[in-house]
Length: 126
Image (cartoon, rainbow, N blue to C red; front, side, top):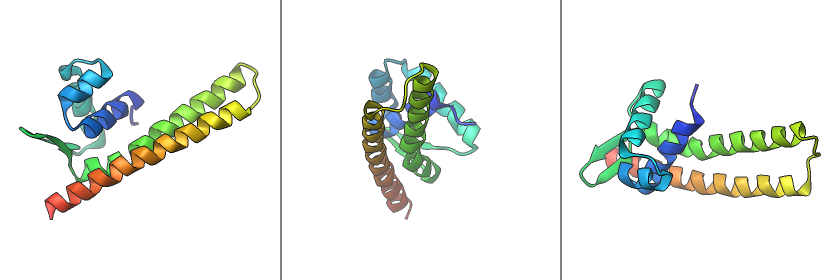
């Protein structure tokens, strides 16, 4: 099963184009970011990132995952928020709907990033 923490690291690496920048954004060590990506690649069973002196770019498998990661994480956050509200005895409110709408916007942005990464990976392998 995919791990939300490792998916978040992957999203940051793709978004920032380097392990170092992702580590800085997450306040992680570069080693921790590298280890998270290696573990995720092991779970997926395919390389996700191509490393070069100029930075990183997604492999075709990485580009496919990048297209889904934002939605996966947003769905998990929405589920956690809804379950948390139920557990606290609150009804589904307008504020919760606004939070979901905000998450949907983030999903759209993440999908755009994933789509761009996919197109770049596809074009560079052609």
